[in-house]
Structure formats: C-alpha cells, structure tokens
Amino acid sequence: MYFTAGPAELYPRFEEYLQEFVDEQLGSISHRSGQFKKIYQHTDEQLRALLSIPEENAIMFTGSASEIWEKSIQSLVEFESFHLVNGSFSEKYYQYSQALGRQADALNKPMGEGFSYGEITVPEYAELICVTQNETSTGVQTREADIHKLKRSHRNKLMAVDMVSSAPIPELDFSLIDSAFFSVQKSFGLPAGLGVWIANEKCLKKAKQLKSKGNSLGAHHDLPSLWKNAKNYQNPATPNVMGIFLLGKVAEDMNKTGLEAIRKQTDEKAKMIYKFFEKKDGYEVFVKNPDHRSKTVAVINTERPSSEIINHLKTKNMIVGAGYGPGKDSQIRVSNFIANTPEQIEALLNEIEKF
Image 1 (cartoon, one colour):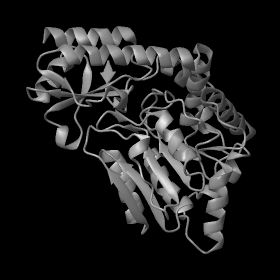
Image 2 (spheres, one colour; image 1 turned 30 degrees about the horizontal axis):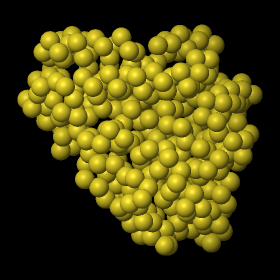
Image 3 (cartoon, helix red, strand yellow; image 1 turned 180 degrees about the horizontal axis):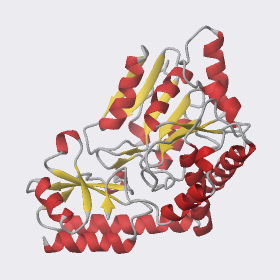
C-alpha cells in the first residue's frame, strides 16, 4: 500500500482500465484518428463535469505539470509575475519565472505556514498571480475562499493555480480562476507522464498579444497551438494517449461516485490522520494552523529518524514518504489521496501505533 505523495497508490480500477486499453489496441492508433478524438472528447467531457469547468475554457494535455510552470510563464507574462512561496514546489514555480528572464516577485512564508487573503499585497505591475493551492513539500494548503478573494480583488490580473497534489478535491471556481493545472500521478491514482492545463479565453488573448509583439512562447506546444488543437479534441503532436484514456475512465468513475461524496470522505480521512498524530507521543503535525493543513498530504515531524519508521512500515508492505528537502530525516509525508481507502489509512495508523 502506497501512502506516498506521488507517484502514489493506483486507482482501484486502474488495472481494469489498462486492460481495456490493451485489448482495444489503443496504443497503436494515430493521434489524428477519429478514434483518438473520441478518447480526448470523453476525457474532456468527464473532467468538465467533475470540476465544473466552463465550456469556454480549454483542457489541454502536456507531459507534466512542471512543463506547465514554464508554459504559463511564457504565455502569460511579458515582464512581471507574482508568487506565493511557502515550500519547495512554489519556490520552483518562482524560479522558473526567473530562469525565463521575467521579474519574479514573491511573498515568502516559512515552511509549514500558509497564506490568508488579508496578508497578501500584489505588486502593481504583476501580470500573473501564481498560487500553489497545495504545497506538496510541506503539507500546506491555500484555502479556496482566499484564492477566490484574491482573484476578485485583482480582476485585471491573471491567476494561475497549481493544484498538482490536490485536484480534484479543491472547490475552485473555474468561471473565476483563469488557469489551473495538475498531473495525474497523485489523487487521480495513475502512472506519471500526463499534465492537465485548464485555461480561459483571457489567457489565450494574453498569449496571442505576446506572440504578436514578437515574444517567444516557446518552441514546443505554445498555448495558442495547444488551445486550437484542444478545441478540436486533438494535440499538436503525439500525446500520451494511454494517460488521456485512463484519466477519462477514472474521471468518469469519480463522476458516478459523486465528487461531493469523494470530498467528504477525503475530509474524514484527513481528520483521522491529524487527530492521531496530534495525540501520539513522538510525533507532531508540522502545519500548526488547522485551516492551512492539506487535505491530501499530511506532513508529520518525527522525534526519531524518519527512516526508522519508514523502514519498519516497509516490512508491513506500507510505503510512506520521507520529508522533502530539509525535512528528509525528521519528517514523514502521508498521502490521503482518493485511492487511499479509509481501511488503508486505519491499517497504517494501527501499525504506527504498534511501532
């Protein structure tokens, strides 16, 4: 059982869907075929239903979410971006903007601390506000209400939301948020290798403006080309057909269960995890403010070296991740993704109790 922050526990019906992909020989079809367009359309429709994505928005596929860090800066920022930074992945998004030669501004918080709307001041000339909704390295979330307030008070600026390790759990308003993105190897329970980029027409307009001025949007699959193809259920070049097919099947299954039911169960499992570690000697929840604790990745401080706990759990066929970066030896990270059932969570906590 995998309780890692991604790649993670595979979705329960993954093998069934993979077998279907193999049986239908879909790995050999052309990405220009009508058959592929039906696969893309099915996944597009299921994601729209799952996340309430407006028809005007494009759903585009890339090789990873990290690729979208770069493409979003290239396509949406001419001069200046603004980043909320409180962990290693929000820091990387900020660094991508710097590497692309933009003026990157940041509001920094110590690891383990989250952001609230009232403390955020956006620089006047920032064109894009970059928010990491769920900081995978530290287990900190930025609440949806704070994200929505921030966008409403800066309607003249674009906003991009990194929801890599939390989608589809956050209740983001996609009629308000300009752009969001995630990858499939976390709460969607699929193998890595597919990024999903959601963007609205304001993003397309900005990208076209930059391109008309002679700005480079990158040589590989820029936003206008991805958008044009997506609206025809295509990709500019051969995409991860298997990943797109599997994502459509998983999203369809989630729609049948109902996202509200999935969110409720995720909340209940998160409460179970945090309540256990709050009371357990030798452990401490890293994120002190309950409002800022991630619902999908719990980061726990350990008194003894985290490797001892991780290695013990391996003997029980339970794989838990170490802390990220500076927390590697003193923290564990426990995933609470959709594929992690309540029974699995309970079994893990019981094993830690025995240890």
